[in-house]
Length: 186
Picture 1 (cartoon, rainbow, N blue to C red):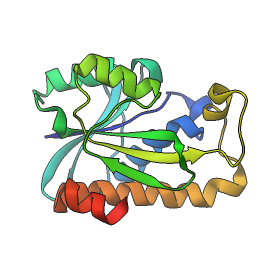
Picture 2 (picture 1 turned 180 degrees about the horizontal axis):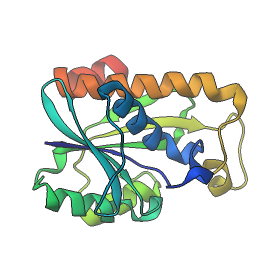
Picture 3 (picture 1 turned 90 degrees about the vertical axis):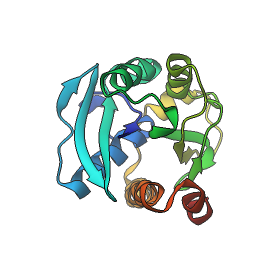
Picture 4 (picture 1 turned 60 degrees about the horizontal axis):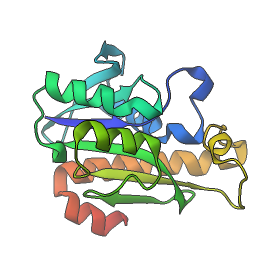
């Protein structure tokens, strides 16, 4: 089983914020597989799905971003997912240009509090991730306000395309492997 984890913050207030890119991808994968992410367990909303013959658990932690690892470690225990390379995490990335995605087998948190929580709770950096670019066009004084702000209307079509591309990349990771997916999308 794979855990496909979208990082974000729960509730309608945060739905279309930059920090919720991960949740948007989980929603797209659920739509593609005819599922709804609504089962409450281990401080997360989940749904079982299948892509490319792989059983997945689509995960939206409900702990708020900074405690995402708490929900994920609980789900890993519940579903006996001992190998962190079977936990694919989707997050926003302030260092990537808006609209770009980057796949990595592992890596540091890069200043992202959700990834910091994942690394701390899983006690490893060795889990794959897809980072979604949200870099501003100009410097911002308050990064917390920037990531918690909604995407402006002018960016919504590009956001939709980025979410679709990240979802395609996840399907490719599951079907052709992470190395080939990295070559295709990075």
